[in-house]
Image (cartoon, rainbow, N blue to C red; front, side, top):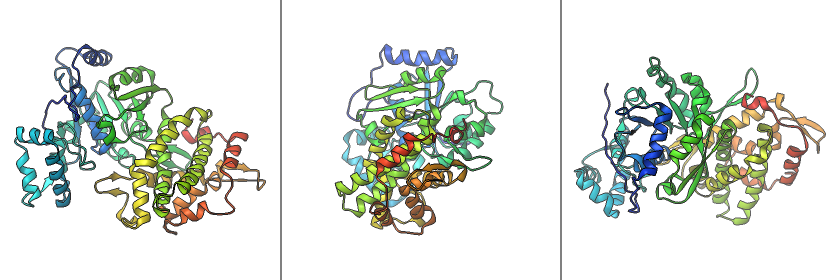
Length: 463
């Protein structure tokens, strides 16, 4: 098989701390190996698929924690080969390297420094997969990672993997896992897949429903949903790798999630487990929708705290309304959803995208995959949620007008974002006009409709 690989062992964190290799770390590996039925000489094989910021950081954290136990666990990451690093990025990367003595020494020790000098001078073109081997994610240049074992041939990466980490955008998940399924036809053992993707698709017939990345993987590969889990939380990838305290939930079947939660847990990254897979996954996509609007409001009002709080009140009431459509006990989701929304509004790429659009620094013709940022998943989520909630079969009662309406009619911000991003009928300023509309209801009214009427639609999640 054709593909490039390079392996290293690193257990030193960027702040100089050394990950302990005592029994507790090894015991977590041994526990997981027992569950997978591993014998001596047969390492647990973990593969990341997709090398965006969060996917790369997730694999790098595993490499930092367990990379020294090479006889028991092997960790690698797949990304497509051939993507060039432009000269501006190469120049910035050179500055980052020289500002970090530990990174500089590491590259010199590995005889890898010269190529970055040549790229800085314009005498060489770097590629995203080759810099990832040295610990640089092309979507997150300012945060050097540990060196990683990178594979550019998908078949080589996944054919014998025990655990696959889906770090792909939701918009690419189906296509890549359909290809992966071809390489798994002769497998005897069934892999476990942990999806990090936050995004959804809408399926409108025969009845409207949401399709999540774990469901896409299930359909593409035939792997039982029991072996597919979702991990999400209020996380910014660069901050987590720099050991800012964070938490997340891994959701799915009890058979896997509890042991995986223990395996993934680190002193600065607390992982809880939960059985509600699909609902948590959908919430991860929903907050991206409103983060784009938050970025627009921030840019258009010169970071007005008052305007942003008005937007927050309305967007959270719309999200609460939507969660009542999706979940029988939506109150359980309030904390995780608001926490994830809060961090995304503060520093996530979707809020950044909204800001740049409103300032005119990027435009819609550039698409939703932005160099240096990766896929802006909120754009496709706006389309999916709008199309889904526009279906008349989901009509809900609107007491102020004494009639039944499509759920989207109670979500004016979602409607406006659809007009801006998908239909391109109006400019970003329309989000402010929607907030200032004198006919807009008090956010509390929307919540009262959700709480006071039976609007739960189990079919939306295929239940």
